[in-house]
Image (tube, rainbow, N blue to C red; front, side, top):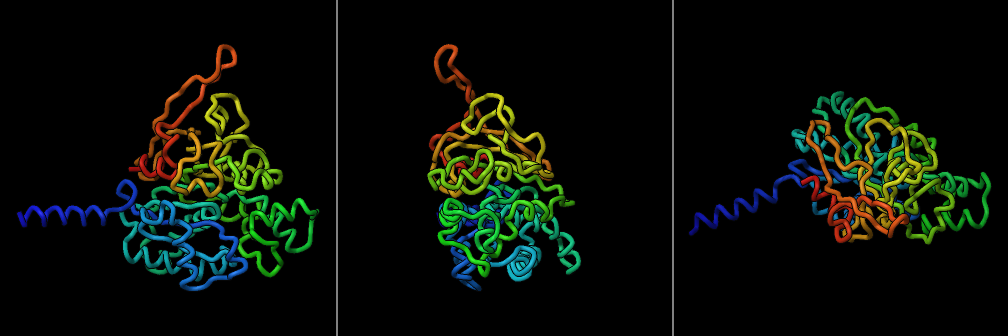
Length: 349
């Protein structure tokens, strides 16, 4: 009896110690936090903010987090004071020795790209083993830049064409009107700037994309975002398109709502960027939440990791409408009652 209890406890402890996604440790990289521009967190505050950021779904399914403050710049203090120490720690701990997956949201997509482009050289120069990153899961990725950041910087500097509508859109996003002294990572998020930051990494790590086309701002910000958007990021960025153009989907044959039709989608993508899940009903922050917001469809239903393992989503096609007015739609199984993040987690496991 005692032996059985011991084996049961050992099994539970072993299971708890296993990596979060398909045998791979998960490293979280959060996105832009507007309140940081005013509060300017440091030290433990940055870590606490990072924990709160992921609290809805991913925090308890991850092994590590890279937390960073939004009042700083990526290539400066964000890297030197927050990213670099964490990379060293993970290398020494062997976190990614057998492979790991980075999960990013929003601006975390851009931070992750900078990490992917540089971590191997940085760690080798420090006499440490580079991280073996086999894939990234990028939710509502802002790696292609954010038009609202261009507007925010213009408002802060008093440049460009500024009117009450622009100020309203920026204040809805940031929660306040920015000034030249508190724009931080917004400088990096400007569309042209973002697309030049580590734009062609030597690493071939697959960047798997998960995008929404809903909004928390009643469409007030969408007027300044080309094509479909999630209220903060335009689809050219969240899909990983090679150019900052107006797109209505991450696919040229499937719309955000799953309708199988010819649609304006990217014909080329940034290096190793692969759009996967899309949904018309998910806003920017919904993509990393724990609640189902709408049915989800696929731009691509499967993709390979760097080491050949893969992730695959089960879909079905259905006809909606009547007679000549009917159309076919592609739907991810169980997506009407399963959050986008949970669909990714389940598929990866």
